[in-house]
Structures are given as structure tokens and as C-alpha cells.
Image (tube, rainbow, N blue to C red; front, side, top):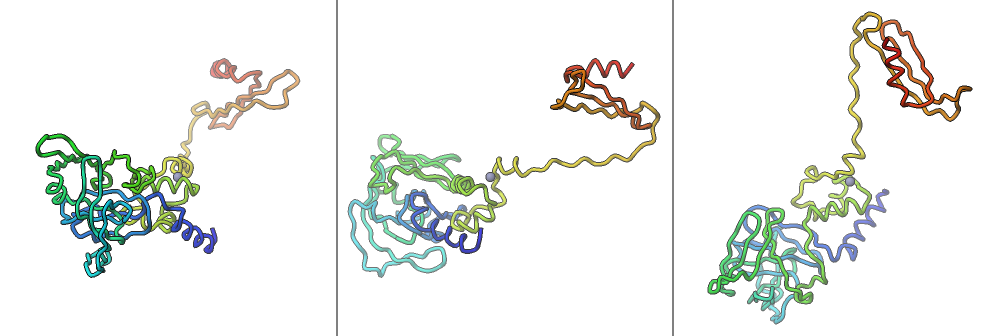
Length: 292
Ligand SMILES: [Zn+2]
């Protein structure tokens, strides 16, 4: 691709092309109490990440709010690059059938939505239990499970079975893990190298080492056969080592209708025997004949 074409592709990808699939990623270790590693791009589906350290719920999407009060712009929080980002507004969001979030901060610059464990335990009167693959939200009185989250790339993502698209702002989209998105683009763009993809989608590669990615098709297609190491020649005696090869079928037959041949070459004397055959299946019998 020429340089201008690459630029154009990046421009396309950054505009409408990518809307609908999430981009960017969040720091994968440590807690997210400072929603710092986050940078928002545009109006797209944004998953909720469970954050045991956050003091408030935060979202990047204003469309999720069922009630909304704009802020003056003086309230700020710190984001990834160390700069402070404005809280545009706050109020309530219906997260799922059983969970309403109160006083959620609207921070347009975020990439991900953050679900504060402290806040949800207080407001929804529930407890949150963490397991190595998932976590569950349980009502403290009835013990009923009111929500769950699944772990992906080291983070717990809230699983939403609540089919209110408007409240979700996701038009039927479901969250796709970053690695799957990278593999999808890798396939869509004709299997370019992952270093090249990183150049096109720096956001997707924020926390993914491009050398840790592997495409089975690429490995199979680009693999070369390991070469044979040439063996040093050992002086031998006649008939100590015989090389053999079968060839055919030839388009042109001999005057006796034979289309195949098998050769036996003695390694020591280089003497060669050639047997013509009607069919390949005659080789075993010919070998027995030769061996005698
Ligand atoms: Zn590939």
C-alpha cells in the first residue's frame, strides 16, 4: 500500500467505519479507581467494567441516562494522560432489569464505562462476589442473583441481558474482546502482519502485544518446509543403499501402453534400473523382482 492509501485507510477506520465496534482498551492490571487510562473516541457501544476501586459510576455515553443534569464544567477527574477531564453531567441510568445506577458521572472522554462496586453495593443493596472467571451481584435480602460479569483480558465486564437497546446505546451490538477484534481486522484486511495492524489501530493494541497474536492460516500459509540436512557420504559397497523413485502417469504411453516407471539406483555404483509399468500398483511386485 502507498503512504497516501494507508493514510486514507486510517482516516476511514477512524470515522464511520469503526462505529459500532469498540476501540481502545483499558489498563489491565491494578484497579481503575482513577479512570485514568481511558480515552474516548466516538459514539459507540461501550461495555461496563466492574471497578472495585472506583468511588463513582462513570460513563462516556450521554444516551444511557434516563435522567440528566448537566454540570457547570468546573468538576473534573483525572484521565490517562494525566490531564483533567470535565464531568459533563450526572444522574441516573437503568443498567439492567434489576439494577438502577444513581448519580452516574458523565465523562465524555472515557473509553469504557466504569461500574463502582462500592456504589452498587450501597445503592442496589447487593453484594458482589468475585471468582476467577466471573463475578456475581446478589441481592442481600433475597440472595437472588441480579447481575453478573465475565472476565475478559483480565477485566470483569458486566453481562447485560437487558434488551433495552436505547438504554444500552448499542443497537444490538454485543461486546467483542479486543483480541477478537484484532483477529477480525486481520482477516478483513487480507491477513496483514500484526505490526502493520498496530499501525492502523493503535487503540486496539494499547494493551495487546502484537507478537503474542497468532493466526493459524498465516502460520500454515507462510511456513516453509524445514530443509534437509545433507548427510556426509559414507563410502559403501554395492547394494548397500538403493535410491528409488516412481514417476507417472505420462500423457503419452509407450507402444505397449505403459505410462509409469520406477527406478532403482545403486548408491555405490550409480547403476540404474528402470522398470516400465501400466499402473502404479505394480511397484511392490517390481520391487520384489528387483530385490531377488
Ligand atoms: Zn492470518
